Length: 484
Image (cartoon, rainbow, N blue to C red; front, side, top):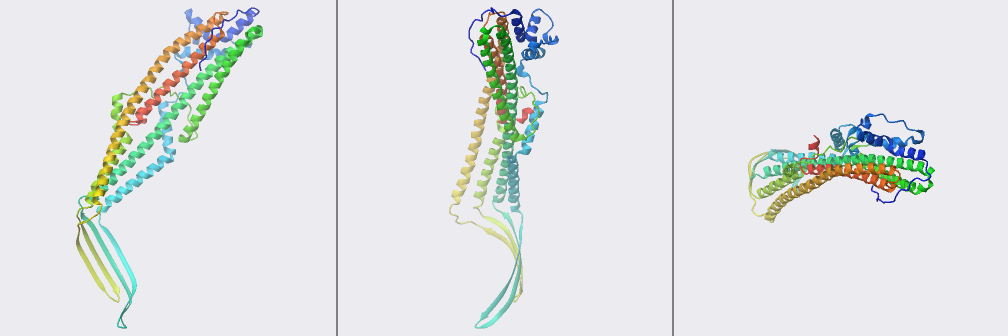
């Protein structure tokens, strides 16, 4: 949140008591400003020095004003890198993805479809095996010739039939291959669905980390503004002419509190979405600010596109369509099969029958056969074009995302440099305001607002880069590859 700087001069205190003014300025100074002064004199860092005890009038204000700056001095980094938990972020993301896989009904449905495709493949392979059937009939029969009944009674028949294909120009083999490729496509479709679920889970987990870190920044900003309000309340009690400054500080505090509440609301919404995938038990926050910080090589990622589940699925589908076209063409050619049957009849007429031999089927006229072959071939060509188009689209997508990630990483680095200068500006502005009127209160609030808005921009740049890097990996081997 930024505040427009204004150049109102701060009037000298007039009737303000010097003791009250020093007490109020002490609320703003706290351990952080003392640490800066000590560092300027070459003393020990403020983080190593015990903080002075708070006076009753300053109780609560000193801790709110100086706590964050002491943490920064102790850890030597920007507060955008601080988070609440020391859990392993990679392990936590893997656990979240695994929980999402276990809970997802959509993944369960895709797995069942994969099993169904495997069963279809087994059925197609079994067509080359002999087929055996047993037929049994029992019926009443009566025959009358010239008014004279010649046969009357029950008749039963039992027949055993055996048939097996011998040669069919590869029709059955191509059908089995078609089913096998469809089963492969189903498995890759399952992998693609799992990858999409993993990407959604990782993206939501990163969003959760983003808003948790933003909430920390806004909490620190709120404490800083609350400290400023405390100081101005003390000043205003001695000098009523400073009431407008107090109102302005209270307004800035309310704006900071509003930004904090909006961020917490967005965080709660993100956690609701994440629970939809992984369940109600969410792990404690982990440091997600650098889990996917390394930008992969562009050429490597474009080559990895061929390893993506989507491309593999389209490849298997195109191969399946070619096999089906070949099976349709083979079905219009002669075929040879083995036939064997034996039958026994009892009742009015007793009989035995045995038949064994070869059956030759030669198609002579099949209207529309050429159209069936052409349609199958066109579908195979269309599947191949879809595969090539997907590969091209993914490669351009990787190139686009790589540029966006590079820009976000560069932006994060530049913001760090700006933050250093912004921190120096706000410290100098606060000191000059404390020196009885050299800077206005509005300059102080503008410097604080600019500093914390840059902190938020830094957090957004870090997490934008990570989410884009996750998308880049999802275009190839998958987002879980860098996490392993």
